[in-house]
Length: 266
Ligand code: ADP
Ligand code: MG
Image (cartoon, rainbow, N blue to C red; front, side, top):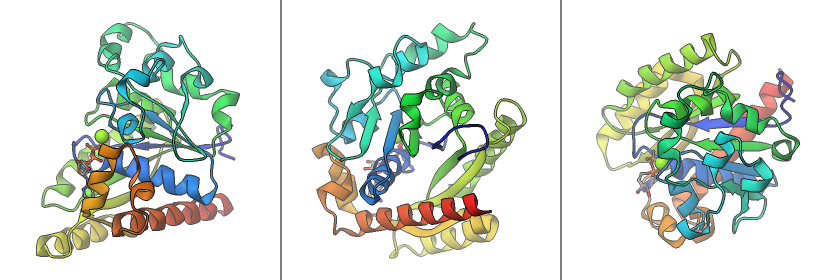
């Protein structure tokens, strides 16, 4: 049990860069955790709603959404939906989220909307809650960081990977110093690794040198099956369990759980 009284682990998947694998990681890590027997919730906080679509929740099937949750008009149980994956639920997003920042800018609790919504017995049902963030440091991402125990950072194996990371780590530090003193780095996961690309291995080495322990051993390979899966409304793990990408996300999930055990034992 976490120190703040939450009975679950709330992990924000964040990186201010787009296209680095946040949503893919949220969906597939959540699916893998659910497959291991954890009860998992994804909160889609990106107005683009890729996590929702990727889990088969079509745009016409999102009566209540994360926007309603943040606005305080609907609860977790009123916004949550089942997915095709047993043990995995999602609070989908809608384009309404685009208006959230403007509508809420005067509210003194504007950063704490998600935290407040997740302090509920309905949310305590889940052992893991993964929050999929938009690609920017806006009020939505701030809400996610204010609500979370930790931040999981997907980092694409490319030349500029480290550049944005220092800014992200700085933001986490600021959040820790202000609205959420407990916020931790859950880990850094290297995504879209291509072994044929010499530069990719160099990036992996650089990231490991700079960040050491925080970087997961699991490398998520670039894998076409992983990129195809969302168009079928399925996580890669359901679409093609045997593909290298699915296997890597299963491995990542066991690493996450192993580290959680170590953390709780410490
Ligand atoms: P973000 O949420 O950070 O914007 P996404 O998870 O949506 O990033 O990934 C960006 C694009 O890259 C998507 O088209 C996705 O399908 C693709 N992608 C992500 N991870 C992989 C992977 N391991 N192999 C191949 N394509 C991937
Ligand atoms: Mg995304």
